[in-house]
Every structure is written in C-alpha cells, then in structure tokens.
Image (tube, rainbow, N blue to C red; front, side, top):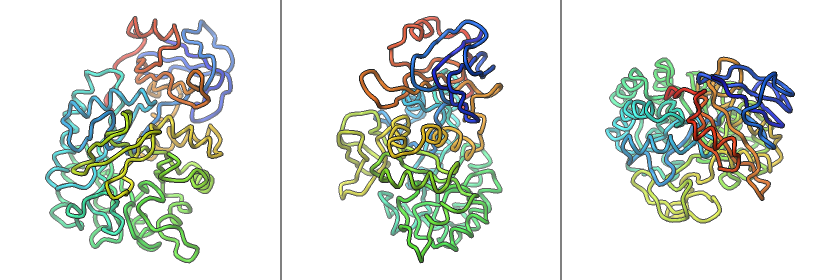
Length: 413
C-alpha cells in the first residue's frame, strides 16, 4: 500500500520541483513528480516544502540524555525523539574521555541498533563519531585536558578493532599531533571517516591530513585558528579544498549569520549543518552534563557553556538551523541541501539525502509553525512511517491512528 504526499514545493535533492508530490510505500520512495499526482492525494500539505530527511553528523545528546553517560536505552530514546526536529539520520557523538570509556561507548552502539529495530520511526543511527581524544590542548574547548591523548599504537589498535566491528563511523583529530597522519591513513583504510578539528594546525598539516585521507572538518570556525590572509590554517584549506566537507554549527551564535552565508557561498555543496547537540536540546534552560563536565544553558536556544563561559555545544535543533541559515541570506534550497544531501553524501549514505525512486522514504515537511514565520519540522516520515507530526493536520491524525500500513519499520542504518 502506498501513500501520496503533495506540497506547494518539493525539493528532491536533485531538483526543485516547485509544486509536486512524492509517493512512498514499503519503506521507500516509489515515485516523485511535478504538479498534480496521477491519482488521489493522501496528504495534501497547504504550505512549506517537502524535503529529504535531515542528517546530523554531531549529536552528543538531547532531551535530557547525555550519550556519554547513557545506556543503550537512552541512546535509543534520543533516536526516537530526533524526528520531532526533522532528523532522520545521525551520528551519536562522544567527546574526549578515558579511552576505556570511549571504547565501551562505541561498542554500546551494537546494542543500540538492536533496540532501534523495535522502534520503527526512530532516526537511523549511522555509527559513532569520536570527537577526540586526539585534540590540540590549546583548542580543546570544553574537552577535559586530562583526557586528551596523542595517537599511539595501542590506542590506534583499539580504534581499528572498533572499525572492524562496524560501529565506528568518524574520528575527529588534530592532524599536527605526532602520529596523527599515520592514524588518519589507518582509519581511512579501515573505512572510518576522519575529520580535522580542535586543532592548531597550519595549512601544510591540514593538507597532509587530507592527502592521508581526511575528508571532513569538525565545526568550521570553532576550536581552530581564525582565518588570516597570510596564515591560511584549517579554515582557508577547508573553504578551498574540494576534498573536504565542513560541519557548521549554524545557530547564529557559534557562528555569526554573515559567516554562515560566507561559508556556504565559499564552499557550495561542501558545508553541512550540524547541531553539536548536548543533553539540553529540547529542554528548558538549566544545568546539564556533557561527559564529566557540567554545562549551563539559557533561554532562546542559545549555546551551552561551561562554568568559565567556554562554548560547550548546541541547543538549537537542526530544523531551526535551516531557518537560521535562510535568515542569513542563503537560498532555501541550499540551506536544505546543507542539512540533507551534503551530510548524507559525506557520510557515505547519499541515498538518505534524496527523494528519488528506491531511496529510503525519509521525508520531512518543513513549514512555518502556526502563527510564526519560522520553518520547523511539522511532520517527519522515517522509512515511510509517520514518526512525528505537530497535530495540526487531520489527515496525519488518521495516518497515525491506522499506524501507516503503507510503511515498514526502517533499518536502524
């Protein structure tokens, strides 16, 4: 059984259809088209835009759950609630901590995948992102200095074991550290993506890491030297080297709106929006945990900070970051692509960033919430299953009531 969604604008990741429709069934996109569909419409959306599911490459926690301190059920709860923000795929991210704890955290992912098989409609967990512990002390941010390490053969061997087990997706490191380039080579050979981040590296160090296989940059502009006209550094390489895809915390506070526009304009198709979300995302202001550190949040979706004022992660969801990016002067199509097609391709899952026949039926209705002009995820389908809606469309209520028989539970990845 299939389901036809229509909307005044459909962005497939390959084209802007304008008014169009998407037909989904058996967990996949079956067909897309412009204008009126050839048959009855099941869900006619009055405004906004239909887009592929959003993909977030950096989620440390959300909804009161810090992934570093959570059990598999906690990780699964985050995955189950992320579709409320339009996110249908993500990398659970662990920050620097004791090596034994990081290894155990990555191995926890296998149990998380098992739990997600019983949670149809949860966001897909695409593998663990280790943000550390191989970071430059001077650019560590809130990563505890006592947990920073230089790459060494013993730790490298443990990471390669995790890569062989299939749960390690990405490692962020500072390429100027002794032994880092060898680790980049070994990790990429094992199928793990390497990101340059929390670094004091110069141009040559970054280029050497890219030549060794690094393909990503973690939260561009943050935790790295600023751009200088005579000292290019990580930012200059990131914005000019076509081999790199750059994560960007587009909340307007980690990175100013005009810099968001500059980044996407300078590196079209190579900037992906990331939340760097912490446990406070989706919750009122207060005190929360990030690993073994206390962090503090304030009203309005502002970033989390440590007691000394250091930025400690994001509290603005990815759908809202699309809105911030558009408000910064970026065309909606480019902002959506930065939250869908760019990250999914950078993580090796281009099928997740497209609405095309045969792709997973991960679909988001982005539209202004009633009484506002701010785009938000009003409804989200994961694997063809309605995973979230805001309760304003009666036809979506009927889908939820009948448990969407046109869908199947998605694969956790």
